[in-house]
Structures are given as C-alpha cells and as structure tokens.
Image (cartoon, rainbow, N blue to C red; front, side, top):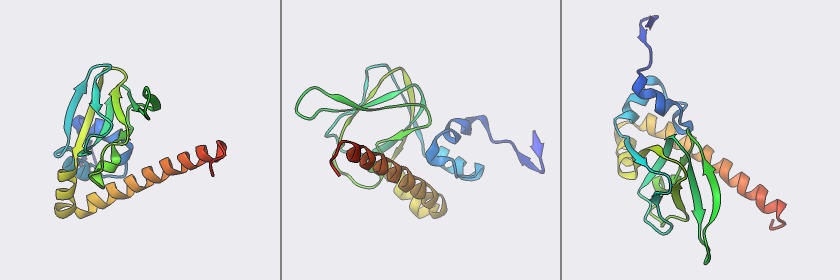
Length: 158
C-alpha cells in the first residue's frame, strides 16, 4: 500500500523493528542494518555463548526466550530471563573482554546477531545510523546499571 508516495515497511524488516535497540531507526536506516544482521536458531537448552568466551557479537531475540546464567564458583544461577525484542551481550560492541555470564536458549529461539566488526564498519559508512544505535545502547546499559544499583541498595550494599 502506498501512502503519500512511500511504501509500507517490508515484512522482512518487522522482526528488527520489534528490537528495542533499533526502534529509533527509519525504514531506510533499518534496511541498512538488515543487511548486516545474521540469523541463528537455537534449541531449548543450547548454549549461545559461555561465560569467559570472548565477546564478538550482540544478540537480539526475535522468537523464544534466553536465560542469562552466571557460575560464581558453584552451580550457575539465573540473572535474567529475556523475551523477544530484548538484546544481550551488548558489551561486545564496546570491548573485547570475556563474557561475564552464559547465555542459554530457555526455549527454541531465533536470534539476530550483529558482530562488532560490522558495527565498526557501520561507524565509517553510516555514522548517523551507528550513532542512533550507540545512543540506544547507552540508554539500555544505563537502565541496566540503574536496576543493578537499585537491587544493591535494597540488599544494603550501597
């Protein structure tokens, strides 16, 4: 359908539109990001990445759920259960530090993966798009930090 000379957003872009990290992008910008994404499917219980692995990519959930687990000397405990639209492994876009936790498919899931190298290329070729994603990522990380601080305050650590 055409409205004022513009085509509706292609159905192929809809999964990306549901990911909070890309919600501020225009349809044209989303097409650029669509060209950089990789899709992966995982079965329930399958490990997406392990604690201690080098972070090379950020993941976004299109379908299913992913749990984030950390083993601190003992058996792993759940830090989070993530649903469609959410992202994880974000720090991989910023540094090459080892993963702080394990990500495991809680149910069969479909993920969109963006590698750090592709994001660095995007910074050079489409700086406006990269800056929008970086700002969204900063807001996302800030929200997680506020949640962690609030939890620490409730436990009497701050």
